Image (spheres, rainbow, N blue to C red):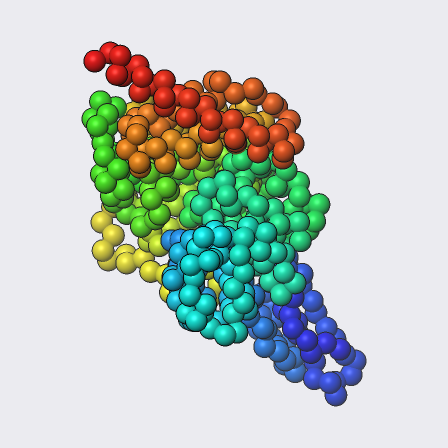
Length: 445
């Protein structure tokens, strides 16, 4: 007879101890089961459903936009979610404020200078403050963590995702780069160690919800929606002198600077296409993208019989975060609700691939596989950093990525070490390309 804590994602139902014979049902994490539906909705007379402890969550990248939204979700659902660990890079004051709010067991600053500068008295006494990337990975592996929210931006997030999956954890994946760079090794590791990937990106959460248990062979295609960013309708020539300030004014989403620039170039959609390939085991010819400026429909799934399912909600990341952290349950939460009275229309249009060539680079990376995803991601990260720093133009971002893909030594079956090496060389290629481009510009004057 069990009166303990329900497993992650599951539940336990027992008859009272005096009942004979005893009867216990257990449903493993994430398992769809008709009995689960029956007992949760209509418990048989005489059955008791004991309280389930909150799911214990570690947030990697807690001071970014996804991390702050995740804390809002956890604070709204204290009976469902408990934050046991937070990790950030440099913003120690914001991390301390988060710790005072949610009282985690441990907090990590991965940047040594930020750790040295941090005021320990700003953190609650019950929170241990640690330093370094390895401390963040140790948090991801910790025995008292059920779910790791991987929300670090860029290639830097791969180590935390890897550590969590290596420990057999459920990973709520907001760091798409983990799959863009190393989709093969990451998914193999998850299968090997019994880990699980649940999507946090709104598009992939929508696909996940629409697919359900449908076999891949019954899916005709998946269509990811893109807002079009702040420059939808502009020409390539219009974008030649765009400033970082203009590119950071996204019309519907509020995100960090790197992701906002990626949305403006449509590189974000290119990376999401690669992520979808690995999350849902789909080839390039079953993946597509469409521009939807209202950002209400987050993706479509078209089945072989012609049916199309879409997931709709306001552009608020708290909903896909909550879905990943509480899956498979659905409970009221802090996310905005769709106002049907205010909804006047939904528009869709094909992306302008001539003006936004970054999108096709993502489809190319899916088709070729191997080292292409790692190279594309690294080149884009390096180019976005240079654009924000004012050393290259907006249209140079996809040009840098194209140059890095063309210059790299393609490997169709790379190891994780080879993928990391390809990442480093792609960043070096962007630096070389930038220098050569500036010299050409000066000599032409």
